[in-house]
Amino acid sequence: MVMKGYDPHTHGGQYLEDLSTAYWVSDSLFTALEMNLFETIDGFGTQGATLSELSRSMLCDANALDRYLDLLVSLGLLGQYQKSYYNSLLTKKYLLKNSPLYQGDSILWRKNLTEDWDTLKASLKAGGRVNFLPEEISETEMDARRENYIKAMDNVAKLKATDCTGFFNDLSGEILDVGTGSGAMALAFLKKFPGTAATLLDIEQILPHTQKMVNQTPFKDRVHYHSCNILDPQWGLDKKYKLIILSNIVHAYAEAENELVLKTAADHLADDGVLLIHDFFTEHFPVKAQLTDVNMMLNTYNGKVFSGAWVINELKRNQLATTSLIPLETDTALIFAAKSSRALDHLAITPLQKLIYPIKALGFDDVLEISPESVIVSEFPKNKCRFGCRSYDQKHCEANDMSLEETTKLLSGYKKAFLLKGEPPTGDFQKKLLEAEKLAFINGYHKAFVFFAGPCSICSKCDPEIPCENTKNRRPSMEGAGIDVFETVRNNGEVLETLSTRDAIVKYYGLLLLE
Image (cartoon, rainbow, N blue to C red; front, side, top):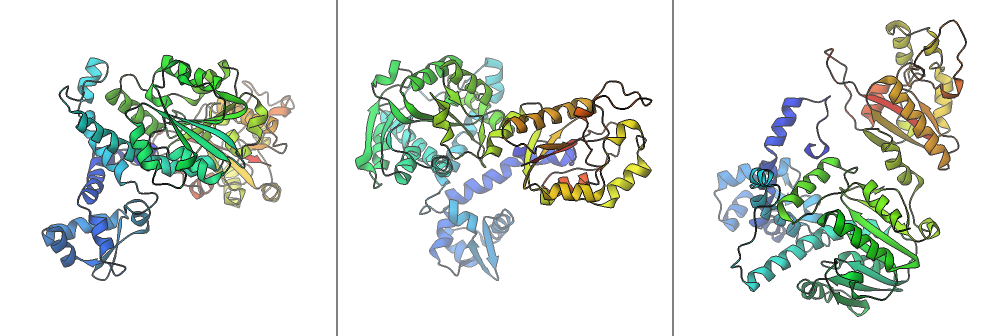
């Protein structure tokens, strides 16, 4: 929950408590990995391991270990049946070394960063990084650090690579993976598309580690290696590529370097090629994006996390057509670019994925994809409007009124919808809802229809003596149409509470139906 940021309709004191004790959770995970706990349990087979067996194997005090194991059970990392502990499905998938999606190297690399985060106060005063590797570090030590880093980034890349390949229905030809690291991203494309070959580009100190990892795969004969600095002019290449990958590259540099990198990538893109940019962006998982940005300040020369809007604008400056920011289920997102929009039309991007961030950019706090079946229609909201609202039976409320039958019938004609989250003033929020409806319409949703939050407040003045002259922008409210906003919002994982004080923060939700 901490990574989602503060929700003013939850307990603020508890949120601060969770922030201040977040390291308790991470230290619990670090310790289990460092002590090889999950591997030890796995070694006992399907029956699991008892407390006494684990305390003997791990040379731990039984009473202390008992309390720690209970903690791991509560975190969902272990399960317990009678007297035996076993690895949960989550642990088996991500925390056992023989798992294809093992994340242990990445997690323990995060622990190594705690020393840098301890310098946050000093870095704020100095204006940047203050913690550097000692000058006397040997090349052997440095190479070991590189290997650990590559393993960590390989864990992360494997977690995201399949999601990235899923946007391609077909691909053949040459792939260029820039700043390749372990090569995991390119290897995922080689696995899915037999008619491809890849050039893996990175600095000379990294590529030996890359080659070592690639040689363990069946794709080594379809891989070439190219050593250069990503900031070198034209990267020492004279070929054009069907796919160029920039995965977690943008946040490693500042504006000037990224302008150069994106221009060079555009120069090497085939006429029918696609540039894939995978990274953190400030619009997507904002808390994690901002944490990553500060992490870059503490750990790099000038790395920073950019908005998707900045990257898209820079791509357009290089005469490239682009998609909008395309969200992944995880904390990163994608932008695709090409010399022609026709190349982007072949990507497997759903219309909803294309809409989420353009709509959010209108000024909404969040855009939630929901099923219309999750919308709750009942008598209660209409009765509350009739007997509990001072706007009832006023002219600006008439536009909000739909019978329960009309509302239910309308909802049954839709299979997709967005909940649009925002805040007062009411009129401004409703105007954004109309903009969202228009944006959906021009992007192919000809039946796009929005429900307001609250009585119609579009016009600055509403003369009750004359008929409405702005019927084009009238829409029903969720409440006036019989939609229970509280239950609908809660049905979709949001927290919405009644206001207990005058200064409590108000949340608004609008409903955009799409078909």
